[in-house]
Length: 171
Ligand code: 5GP
Image (cartoon, rainbow, N blue to C red; front, side):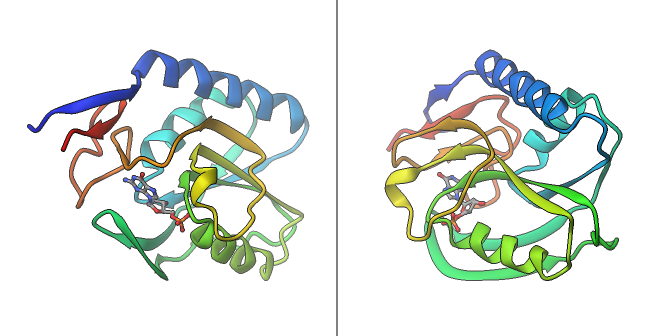
């Protein structure tokens, strides 16, 4: 295992995810939600966030990819579509990180054509310095500097997703 510097430890992540879950629970009281985790990077965050929300909800995964290694290709590919209609539903997209914003802009436009009642965005991380297109994040875990992070679902060439914390590879 190469050296990894801890950026955000597991306890801090858990605390923040609980807070986001409580905020969503409060702001959507009386509603039924559809969580749409964007695979692959958000699977850990989505699993924890779902359990921190005390409301009836269903989960439908959406797969897309815009990264190879550590650089954005700028091309967003759909790798898995939703399996149910979201027409008339309150949707919360769950993303690992908003970087340039291209993936989320594509994703949100795509979902809005399906006529949901509302679409919100929950993202564990945001790198505002890298933004190329504006994206509104309704529920944000942490704002971070322009560093390439791994762990808690995020990969480097498909590895490190299982780290329980967020880290940066030491080069
Ligand atoms: P965007 O389209 O906003 O530039 O990129 C979004 C996607 O790029 C994220 O869903 C994530 O998969 C990947 N990404 C962006 N920054 C990082 C990073 O620091 N670490 C990892 N592992 N993936 C990143």
